[in-house]
Image (tube, rainbow, N blue to C red; front, side, top):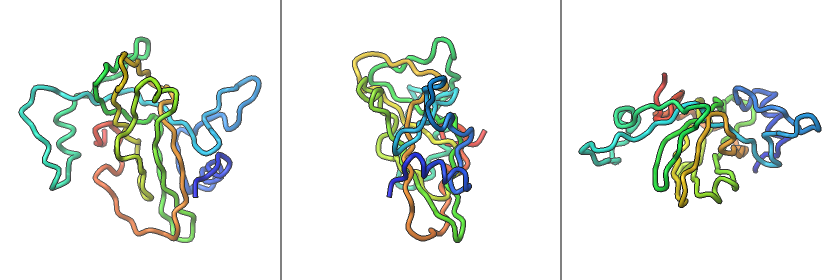
Length: 196
């Protein structure tokens, strides 16, 4: 079951969902019409850095063994996004970004459990920006910043700015309490999946 905007806010208030800093304002007003909550999602913002691939290395991914987090930090360089000029994501280019917000889906016995999906925003998608490929699920028990796997499929550069509302988080209720199974990206604070 997908949570409505009101239910997302109730989950935040009860501590069953953590989004820090909290998306505000909770409702639009005449003085502040910008509201990050849609009817069934909440917008998340782009953090201030990207992981940009280092090209020209003799490398091929062998994903059979897993444990890719350590490798990613070696083949990507961290680049701070210029707040004034942004970062021009060229057509066909791929970078990793991260949400400004830390998101956590605590597993607590006797409490509701949630999971989420990170999705693109339709206006950005229509320009060719993909914010994830095949891994939109944020599992119960996750705690960290959400990595965005961004690619420009359009014909023109797309300028990325820190703090822009780039993705939407859809929250779903999980039936019963799952057992914990932390991923290699648990607690990530950088786009490449490491803790800084």
